[in-house]
Figure 1 (spheres, one colour):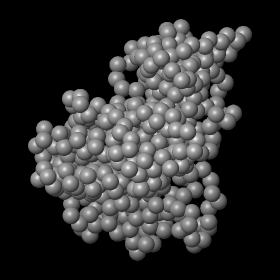
Figure 2 (figure 1 turned 60 degrees about the vertical axis):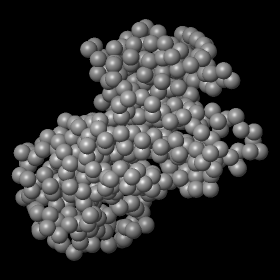
Figure 3 (figure 1 turned 90 degrees about the vertical axis):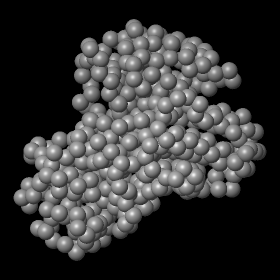
Figure 4 (figure 1 turned 180 degrees about the horizontal axis):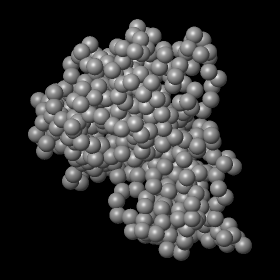
Length: 143
Length: 340
């Protein structure tokens, strides 16, 4: 069953708040795709998501490391950024298959770079520029 | 002690031989063009990070260029983190096996320590203690280096690394990816006054950086341009961006030098190759009575020489490890210890 939510975001605080709301509703295992141009707020969204789960440190862009893992008491969040992927084969280098367990939430920026090698998304999020800020579209794709 | 260094943490495969008495003997970075058939044939172009195919031919080539036999090596050093775990494991496995076959020790080296120590590959080498600004695609840190293995983190980027900001801005301006150097090139003919982008966190205390907001400011300015102005404005935007980055890095580094009370500065990592940053750092250092050291350009980006050097220093000091093959995607600089 598909559900869709659209919301306007006026600043990065609102992006983080929107992410926090989603974070509180989810249980692992869960795969979230994040679409949006450079600077659209994907990493900001992930920061809000992780803070809501209790992470207090920085949330750095994983563009170069491709992957940052955040351990929590009852789960792990893996923040992936596939922007730099030149060949989907490189997902092997990341140890992607080791990340797909029952305790994990995957937040994946630029999922389109991996073609069809990624696990299917449970939630698909798109961030767009608007004249006054950003718009977010959150789609829940079945279970 | 003569050490073979192996770097495979990310995109580059780098191999080098460093000799504790005679310095760097040879170093190679994989490139398709310079691999000759005698080292196993021209390898078909695969994924850029396919270290498996590149690493053994590159070791052979490096030993050949150094004109030494592998039996005269005294140790092997490899990058054990941080980086992409699959890529690191290739280097770790080859290094351990190669060393075991020769009956010599192998040691996992921290990639960031390699960058910090890279200026020690040069004739004019910094003494300890020194302050290091480490600026690359993955890292932006100000580190106080008291001696090998004794590091204090004074500040770092809370979001995007500075090299990443360069590359993403370049992508936005249609210069390809990664396009940091191309961006610096077109900035040469840009007007430094035309765009004034924010200097993130410059007025805040401490030595942390943030470059994500700067990226967004550039995007906003770019999107406002009418189509017919895009081409002519690109170089001005690039220059405005570069000015903001350089001023932020220089100002924070200068403050850190004052607080830490050291008069030696190292600027290392891929962004240390940026001409405008180098010039501004030299100017600031002159005014502050500080001596500044840079690695040569080819040792700013990832390379095997810095790994061979760091490994040689630690192995010479008697550090050793068991035979377990391991690598970690995360390995903070601050968790390192001096060699036992």
